[in-house]
Image (tube, rainbow, N blue to C red; front, side, top):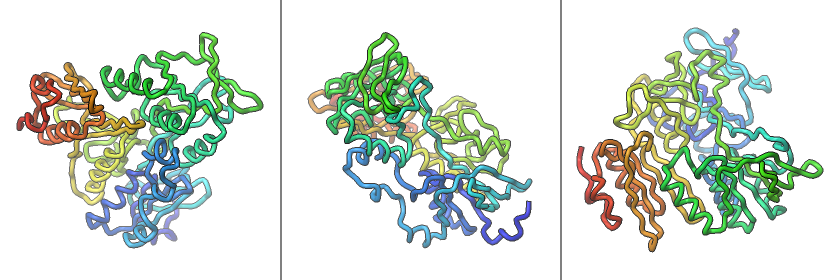
Length: 422
């Protein structure tokens, strides 16, 4: 490998102009990191926020410019070289971790250190008719633009998948005056992220707002005429009209570049508590990274891949410390949110392994919370339209305190007043 003519551009190469990539570059400069930084993205867009794509952007409440992370002046002032529209296909690397990444265009990007913030891609539908026009996904800006362009000509929208993205987009389509059917293959909504009580709450709430939701849905095929989707055919023979079929059945972490470098991968790129991959040199951050579970009290050896804006930000800070030669473990409490119509869900902590729940419900005020406990200790909460409950649980988890379950069972009790110290 001949890199002698390229050495003036070496430094850190961040592959993936995602939330994690943007945060990593910014955090490094804030820490006084001086080497050159190149932030490289596959999309031909400036780095942007993704959460609004299924909500305000789809509904036309905000424009694309309002989603942009940083101004052109920011990148210049912080000496971060931003590269758009380049997809890295090959990485040649030396034993010290330096090397050259080559894009599909033939462009070459030398580096001394490498960071992978490559995210994840939408899992595609494997059914007859899935290639028809009008079968769409919602993962990036181009997906959102394509879906937005189809909306005016559609009367019926079928959403395949009852997870966060599916329900957010379904609620948006309903608000836009469409007839919307949600088909979820599992026995409940958002089954990977919340407990049964929260799933049931959302099922009832969305049905009352006008969504047609079918659980344990068995789909036989997507049907179309002249190459365009017209319906979804169910296994029992029923046909559901659709001019748009939005597929939201999860994501697949982008590990191909990591695998080509010989890095260990298992449901993402395996990293240690400092965001370092198995070679001890490369960092991997955000949706693509499989990390040790950062929640206090997690079992030894427990690992997790977290898909959230908050995780991308906090994990990037950990990686920034690693790249500056320091060590700082993930210090935050994982938290998530999902806005579905007027339902504002906030999740604090991870409920995996809970053995007891407390439900706090105030239908008059539209508030609903589920607190999750393990061996009497609060470990997580799902809070709908209840920010005070969310903040109380988040703060208790951060301080390793507790919220006694028997006292929390009274919905009128403010959780912050009964939180105990560690």
